[in-house]
Image 1: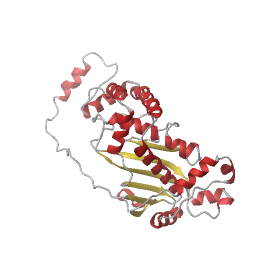
Image 2 (image 1 turned 90 degrees about the horizontal axis):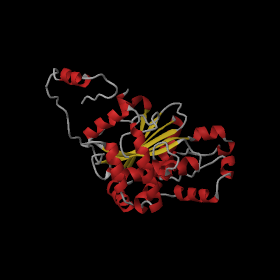
Image 3 (image 1 turned 90 degrees about the vertical axis):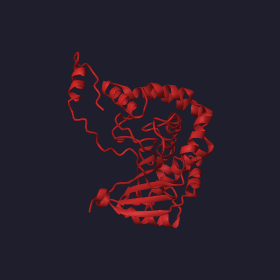
Image 4 (image 1 turned 30 degrees about the vertical axis):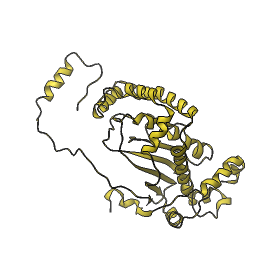
Length: 319
Protein backbone atom coordinates (compact mmCIF):
# COMPACT_ATOMS: atom_id res chain seq x y z
CA UNK A 1 0.00 0.00 0.00
CA UNK A 2 1.38 3.39 -0.98
CA UNK A 3 0.01 6.69 0.30
CA UNK A 4 0.71 10.26 -0.72
CA UNK A 5 -0.26 13.38 1.24
CA UNK A 6 0.75 17.02 1.32
CA UNK A 7 1.26 19.87 -1.12
CA UNK A 8 2.32 17.78 -4.12
CA UNK A 9 2.17 19.26 -7.64
CA UNK A 10 -0.71 18.67 -10.02
CA UNK A 11 -0.83 15.18 -11.52
CA UNK A 12 1.90 13.92 -9.15
CA UNK A 13 -0.46 11.34 -7.69
CA UNK A 14 -1.28 10.09 -11.18
CA UNK A 15 2.42 9.87 -11.99
CA UNK A 16 3.04 7.78 -8.87
CA UNK A 17 0.18 5.49 -9.79
CA UNK A 18 1.51 5.15 -13.32
CA UNK A 19 5.00 4.27 -12.11
CA UNK A 20 3.63 1.65 -9.73
CA UNK A 21 1.78 -0.11 -12.53
CA UNK A 22 5.16 -0.88 -14.09
CA UNK A 23 6.18 -2.98 -11.12
CA UNK A 24 5.91 -6.76 -11.05
CA UNK A 25 2.46 -8.15 -10.37
CA UNK A 26 3.89 -11.26 -8.72
CA UNK A 27 1.92 -12.06 -5.57
CA UNK A 28 4.04 -12.66 -2.44
CA UNK A 29 3.33 -15.58 -0.17
CA UNK A 30 2.00 -13.65 2.81
CA UNK A 31 0.87 -15.56 5.88
CA UNK A 32 -2.61 -14.31 6.77
CA UNK A 33 -3.53 -16.38 9.83
CA UNK A 34 -1.42 -16.76 12.96
CA UNK A 35 -1.73 -18.92 16.03
CA UNK A 36 -0.16 -18.56 19.46
CA UNK A 37 0.06 -20.95 22.36
CA UNK A 38 -2.62 -20.40 24.99
CA UNK A 39 -1.03 -19.45 28.30
CA UNK A 40 -2.14 -21.08 31.53
CA UNK A 41 -1.72 -19.31 34.86
CA UNK A 42 0.52 -16.37 35.66
CA UNK A 43 4.00 -17.01 34.27
CA UNK A 44 6.88 -14.80 35.33
CA UNK A 45 10.09 -14.36 33.33
CA UNK A 46 12.91 -12.56 35.12
CA UNK A 47 15.65 -11.11 32.94
CA UNK A 48 18.86 -10.63 34.88
CA UNK A 49 20.75 -7.54 33.77
CA UNK A 50 23.99 -6.50 35.39
CA UNK A 51 23.87 -2.93 36.65
CA UNK A 52 20.12 -2.40 36.15
CA UNK A 53 19.01 0.58 38.24
CA UNK A 54 15.50 -0.75 38.86
CA UNK A 55 12.91 -3.35 37.89
CA UNK A 56 11.01 -2.75 34.64
CA UNK A 57 7.78 -4.75 34.47
CA UNK A 58 5.56 -5.73 31.56
CA UNK A 59 2.55 -8.05 31.56
CA UNK A 60 -0.19 -9.07 29.19
CA UNK A 61 -2.34 -11.60 27.40
CA UNK A 62 -3.64 -12.19 23.89
CA UNK A 63 -6.91 -10.60 22.80
CA UNK A 64 -8.82 -11.58 19.66
CA UNK A 65 -9.98 -8.05 18.93
CA UNK A 66 -8.69 -4.98 17.12
CA UNK A 67 -10.02 -1.72 15.65
CA UNK A 68 -12.13 -3.59 13.12
CA UNK A 69 -14.45 -4.73 15.94
CA UNK A 70 -17.35 -2.54 17.13
CA UNK A 71 -16.38 -3.57 20.69
CA UNK A 72 -12.97 -1.92 20.49
CA UNK A 73 -14.12 1.61 21.38
CA UNK A 74 -15.62 0.34 24.63
CA UNK A 75 -12.33 -1.29 25.57
CA UNK A 76 -10.55 1.99 24.86
CA UNK A 77 -12.73 3.71 27.46
CA UNK A 78 -12.01 1.10 30.14
CA UNK A 79 -8.32 1.12 29.29
CA UNK A 80 -8.10 4.91 29.41
CA UNK A 81 -9.53 4.98 32.92
CA UNK A 82 -7.19 2.20 34.07
CA UNK A 83 -3.93 3.31 32.47
CA UNK A 84 -4.03 5.73 29.52
CA UNK A 85 -0.50 6.29 28.21
CA UNK A 86 1.20 9.18 30.03
CA UNK A 87 -1.98 10.43 31.66
CA UNK A 88 -1.88 11.28 35.34
CA UNK A 89 -5.63 10.82 35.85
CA UNK A 90 -5.53 7.05 35.24
CA UNK A 91 -6.02 4.63 38.09
CA UNK A 92 -2.66 2.86 38.06
CA UNK A 93 -0.78 6.15 37.80
CA UNK A 94 -2.71 7.53 40.76
CA UNK A 95 -2.21 4.45 42.92
CA UNK A 96 1.40 3.55 42.15
CA UNK A 97 3.11 6.80 41.24
CA UNK A 98 1.00 9.63 42.62
CA UNK A 99 0.07 8.17 46.01
CA UNK A 100 3.23 6.12 46.66
CA UNK A 101 6.00 7.79 44.62
CA UNK A 102 7.17 4.39 43.40
CA UNK A 103 8.09 5.15 39.78
CA UNK A 104 7.34 7.37 36.79
CA UNK A 105 5.05 5.36 34.53
CA UNK A 106 2.12 2.98 35.07
CA UNK A 107 0.12 2.43 31.91
CA UNK A 108 -2.05 -0.11 30.10
CA UNK A 109 -2.71 -0.74 26.41
CA UNK A 110 -5.32 -2.53 24.30
CA UNK A 111 -3.14 -2.68 21.19
CA UNK A 112 0.50 -2.46 20.18
CA UNK A 113 1.96 0.93 21.13
CA UNK A 114 5.07 1.83 19.16
CA UNK A 115 7.91 3.51 21.10
CA UNK A 116 5.96 4.12 24.30
CA UNK A 117 8.95 5.84 25.86
CA UNK A 118 9.13 8.46 23.12
CA UNK A 119 5.56 8.99 21.90
CA UNK A 120 2.92 10.96 23.75
CA UNK A 121 0.19 10.03 21.27
CA UNK A 122 -0.50 6.65 19.61
CA UNK A 123 1.47 6.67 16.34
CA UNK A 124 0.09 5.57 12.99
CA UNK A 125 1.56 2.71 11.02
CA UNK A 126 1.25 -0.01 13.67
CA UNK A 127 -1.69 -2.17 12.52
CA UNK A 128 -1.88 -5.71 13.87
CA UNK A 129 -3.99 -8.69 12.83
CA UNK A 130 -3.47 -10.12 16.33
CA UNK A 131 -3.64 -8.05 19.46
CA UNK A 132 -3.06 -8.08 23.21
CA UNK A 133 -3.76 -6.27 26.45
CA UNK A 134 -0.67 -5.15 28.33
CA UNK A 135 0.44 -3.49 31.56
CA UNK A 136 3.60 -1.35 31.65
CA UNK A 137 5.23 -0.43 35.00
CA UNK A 138 8.50 1.55 34.73
CA UNK A 139 10.66 1.24 36.80
CA UNK A 140 10.39 0.34 40.49
CA UNK A 141 13.27 0.13 42.92
CA UNK A 142 15.27 -2.97 43.78
CA UNK A 143 16.26 -3.93 47.31
CA UNK A 144 19.85 -3.01 46.45
CA UNK A 145 18.81 0.46 45.36
CA UNK A 146 16.64 1.09 48.40
CA UNK A 147 19.31 -0.13 50.83
CA UNK A 148 21.84 2.16 49.22
CA UNK A 149 19.65 5.20 49.79
CA UNK A 150 17.99 4.61 53.14
CA UNK A 151 19.65 3.27 56.28
CA UNK A 152 16.28 2.31 57.73
CA UNK A 153 15.74 -0.16 54.84
CA UNK A 154 19.03 -2.03 55.22
CA UNK A 155 17.29 -5.29 56.18
CA UNK A 156 14.70 -5.56 53.41
CA UNK A 157 14.66 -8.77 51.36
CA UNK A 158 13.17 -7.73 48.04
CA UNK A 159 12.36 -4.50 46.20
CA UNK A 160 9.08 -3.00 45.04
CA UNK A 161 8.36 -5.22 42.01
CA UNK A 162 6.09 -7.83 43.70
CA UNK A 163 4.02 -5.13 45.40
CA UNK A 164 3.64 -3.13 42.18
CA UNK A 165 2.56 -6.27 40.33
CA UNK A 166 -0.02 -7.12 42.99
CA UNK A 167 -1.33 -3.56 42.92
CA UNK A 168 -1.72 -3.62 39.13
CA UNK A 169 -3.36 -7.05 39.22
CA UNK A 170 -5.79 -6.02 41.97
CA UNK A 171 -6.83 -2.79 40.26
CA UNK A 172 -7.37 -4.57 36.95
CA UNK A 173 -9.40 -7.28 38.65
CA UNK A 174 -11.58 -4.78 40.49
CA UNK A 175 -12.28 -2.88 37.28
CA UNK A 176 -13.30 -6.08 35.48
CA UNK A 177 -15.45 -7.36 38.34
CA UNK A 178 -17.00 -4.12 39.60
CA UNK A 179 -17.05 -2.11 36.37
CA UNK A 180 -16.82 1.64 35.86
CA UNK A 181 -19.06 4.06 37.71
CA UNK A 182 -21.31 6.28 35.63
CA UNK A 183 -19.28 9.37 36.54
CA UNK A 184 -15.97 7.72 35.61
CA UNK A 185 -17.47 6.43 32.37
CA UNK A 186 -18.86 9.81 31.31
CA UNK A 187 -15.65 11.71 32.06
CA UNK A 188 -13.39 9.16 30.37
CA UNK A 189 -15.56 8.86 27.27
CA UNK A 190 -15.75 12.64 26.88
CA UNK A 191 -11.99 12.90 27.26
CA UNK A 192 -11.32 10.27 24.59
CA UNK A 193 -13.71 11.89 22.12
CA UNK A 194 -11.59 15.05 22.26
CA UNK A 195 -8.20 13.43 22.78
CA UNK A 196 -8.43 11.03 19.84
CA UNK A 197 -8.71 13.95 17.42
CA UNK A 198 -5.13 14.89 18.32
CA UNK A 199 -3.92 11.59 16.83
CA UNK A 200 -4.10 13.09 13.33
CA UNK A 201 -2.29 16.40 13.74
CA UNK A 202 -0.32 17.01 10.55
CA UNK A 203 -0.54 15.50 7.09
CA UNK A 204 1.74 12.53 7.75
CA UNK A 205 -0.38 11.36 10.70
CA UNK A 206 -3.60 11.86 8.74
CA UNK A 207 -2.16 9.77 5.95
CA UNK A 208 -0.92 7.11 8.36
CA UNK A 209 -4.27 6.73 10.08
CA UNK A 210 -6.05 6.70 6.71
CA UNK A 211 -3.84 3.80 5.61
CA UNK A 212 -4.36 2.02 8.92
CA UNK A 213 -8.11 2.42 8.43
CA UNK A 214 -7.86 0.49 5.16
CA UNK A 215 -6.00 -2.32 6.96
CA UNK A 216 -8.83 -2.66 9.49
CA UNK A 217 -11.56 -2.44 6.87
CA UNK A 218 -12.63 1.04 7.90
CA UNK A 219 -12.96 4.26 5.91
CA UNK A 220 -11.85 6.83 8.53
CA UNK A 221 -11.02 5.37 11.93
CA UNK A 222 -10.77 8.68 13.80
CA UNK A 223 -14.16 9.90 12.59
CA UNK A 224 -15.74 6.49 13.15
CA UNK A 225 -14.18 6.27 16.60
CA UNK A 226 -15.89 9.49 17.68
CA UNK A 227 -19.22 8.02 16.63
CA UNK A 228 -18.54 4.69 18.32
CA UNK A 229 -17.48 6.38 21.56
CA UNK A 230 -20.59 8.56 21.49
CA UNK A 231 -22.77 5.47 21.19
CA UNK A 232 -21.10 3.62 24.08
CA UNK A 233 -22.92 3.14 27.37
CA UNK A 234 -21.47 2.27 30.77
CA UNK A 235 -23.28 -1.07 30.70
CA UNK A 236 -21.72 -1.86 27.35
CA UNK A 237 -18.20 -1.02 28.55
CA UNK A 238 -18.56 -3.13 31.69
CA UNK A 239 -19.94 -6.08 29.69
CA UNK A 240 -17.21 -5.94 27.04
CA UNK A 241 -14.46 -5.80 29.68
CA UNK A 242 -15.69 -9.11 31.06
CA UNK A 243 -15.79 -10.53 27.55
CA UNK A 244 -12.17 -9.78 26.64
CA UNK A 245 -10.20 -9.16 29.85
CA UNK A 246 -8.97 -11.59 32.48
CA UNK A 247 -6.09 -11.79 34.96
CA UNK A 248 -5.76 -15.53 35.54
CA UNK A 249 -3.55 -16.31 32.54
CA UNK A 250 -0.92 -13.67 31.99
CA UNK A 251 2.71 -13.39 31.00
CA UNK A 252 4.84 -11.18 33.27
CA UNK A 253 8.38 -10.05 32.44
CA UNK A 254 10.72 -8.28 34.86
CA UNK A 255 14.03 -6.83 33.71
CA UNK A 256 16.06 -6.27 36.86
CA UNK A 257 19.48 -6.20 38.47
CA UNK A 258 21.16 -9.54 39.07
CA UNK A 259 21.05 -8.93 42.84
CA UNK A 260 17.22 -8.91 42.73
CA UNK A 261 16.78 -12.19 40.84
CA UNK A 262 17.06 -14.70 43.66
CA UNK A 263 14.78 -12.77 46.06
CA UNK A 264 12.17 -12.44 43.31
CA UNK A 265 12.31 -16.14 42.45
CA UNK A 266 11.87 -17.08 46.11
CA UNK A 267 9.01 -14.60 46.56
CA UNK A 268 7.03 -16.01 43.62
CA UNK A 269 7.83 -19.69 44.09
CA UNK A 270 7.15 -19.69 47.83
CA UNK A 271 4.23 -17.25 47.74
CA UNK A 272 6.00 -14.98 50.22
CA UNK A 273 4.50 -11.65 51.28
CA UNK A 274 5.90 -8.56 49.62
CA UNK A 275 5.07 -5.63 51.89
CA UNK A 276 5.51 -2.14 50.56
CA UNK A 277 8.46 -0.38 52.21
CA UNK A 278 9.09 3.36 52.43
CA UNK A 279 11.79 5.64 53.69
CA UNK A 280 10.90 7.22 57.02
CA UNK A 281 10.43 10.59 55.41
CA UNK A 282 8.00 9.37 52.77
CA UNK A 283 6.07 7.12 55.15
CA UNK A 284 5.43 10.01 57.53
CA UNK A 285 3.70 11.91 54.73
CA UNK A 286 1.28 9.12 53.78
CA UNK A 287 -2.31 8.90 54.96
CA UNK A 288 -3.58 6.05 57.15
CA UNK A 289 -5.82 5.03 54.22
CA UNK A 290 -2.83 4.46 51.96
CA UNK A 291 -0.99 2.42 54.58
CA UNK A 292 -4.10 0.35 55.27
CA UNK A 293 -4.50 -0.33 51.56
CA UNK A 294 -0.86 -1.44 51.45
CA UNK A 295 -1.70 -4.26 53.85
CA UNK A 296 -4.60 -5.35 51.64
CA UNK A 297 -2.42 -5.36 48.53
CA UNK A 298 0.35 -7.25 50.33
CA UNK A 299 -2.11 -10.05 51.13
CA UNK A 300 -3.71 -10.05 47.70
CA UNK A 301 -3.40 -13.49 46.06
CA UNK A 302 -0.92 -13.67 43.20
CA UNK A 303 -0.48 -17.36 42.31
CA UNK A 304 2.42 -17.98 39.95
CA UNK A 305 2.48 -21.06 37.74
CA UNK A 306 6.05 -20.84 36.49
CA UNK A 307 9.15 -18.69 37.07
CA UNK A 308 11.89 -18.53 34.45
CA UNK A 309 15.22 -16.71 34.73
CA UNK A 310 17.01 -15.49 31.59
CA UNK A 311 20.37 -13.76 31.35
CA UNK A 312 20.04 -10.50 29.42
CA UNK A 313 22.80 -11.56 27.02
CA UNK A 314 20.66 -14.51 25.93
CA UNK A 315 17.54 -12.55 25.06
CA UNK A 316 16.50 -12.28 21.39
CA UNK A 317 18.47 -15.42 20.54
CA UNK A 318 21.81 -14.11 21.83
CA UNK A 319 24.45 -16.43 23.22
